[in-house]
Length: 88
Length: 464
Image (tube, rainbow over all chains, first blue to last red; front, side):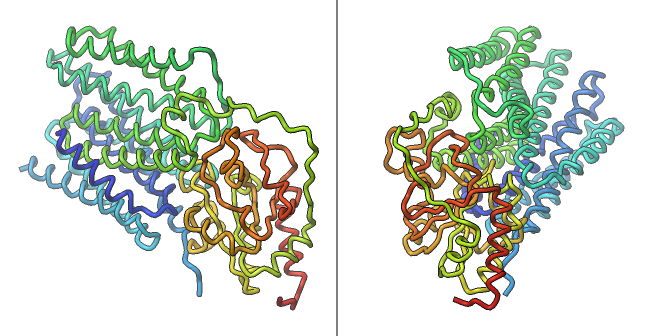
């Protein structure tokens, strides 16, 4: 697991260093949406029906993550649409 | 069978996430990156929904629906408010991590399945998650200006913060190694993390927000990684690590752009350094009218516009775009010099100018534009201040000494549009305004540039 973490961090550094500075704000909203992968853990908690309290915690977590997924991807796309080349 | 399918969907998701970030290296492929991200997330969610542990879909559906309804309005905020939205989403990310960690602790406590490894991972997840939650809420509040943006400091602040954090980790260690089931210690971790998040952001001033947002971005990613360790889920670890490393890279860039270290941002409130008392000698500035500015600009060959957040506050972007069009039409070469900390978050100024339909090829980073400044005829400073202050290069007594700046003072003429001679956000005098080559155009940026546009247009056929 630690190996996976270190490898992913390495890949992250490699890929993100190449991201144009122009796009750092969209980068942050996109990685926001991607780290809302926490939705996976939240779904597992909300759906396993262990106890009422954990179902509530899981449901709130699903809603919080889903908010990030929806708003993160939509706003990233909205910003990227604005970047246009010179019309010549 | 399902097991393989789940692994396959998680693998696809991880690959798509990496591609998604890769395509962000150019504005041409960037939107493809968003699509890859959406597909990756869909694969991950579908892959999770077919997991055998899931027996009840009702609450999942409710959560997904609430999140969708909440997310859409948040994606439509004005672009000046994007930093707040980003901070808010870090808060949600932290909250989700904290809640999932807590739910797992309760589950494993009831089944007697807590182990040292599990408790350690949960403690880490919950500390990171909850401190990101309240810290990001504070940051969002400061950016939205519902909380005073000025740093709030008191004696021994850093000591108090460190002790709180140490106490939270201490409780975690106690739980992990001595008494897994002692839930009051767990409650202490939660409470301390929530309080620590608030106290961490209180002393940080508005000028440091770009760094703080990036750092909180990193924490939000790392809390997802910790969740991955708790749930033994590789996809969470990978996606969280991507987010964490992105936040870290951006924080480092922001720190470099302000010549500060991490510890300096977190432990030393900016603005504490009072501006060195204004020197007695009366310095004079030259002022110019909109007509003067128009004349100078139309007779120039190369113009560099240096925008700051003040331009966005004055809503002057669209007027700036008109000016850009007018000058370009007359054959003037116009570029924008973007300082890394212009705006309230990394890259913010680029987005604001892109919204005003200024082509991105004209937006030039500080390091690329500086060598060209000596050949620039006119530098037009709109709403920027500290990022063009030459004191950063030579005045060791200045609080911004050492910060890389855009070398506006090296151009042949400087025009600065400013409301008044009041020092800016950081309260530092800017000697650029007293330079012999500098003309000051006083007034609201939107109104002044509007007048300049009219004056430039009014010249009619005048081609220089």
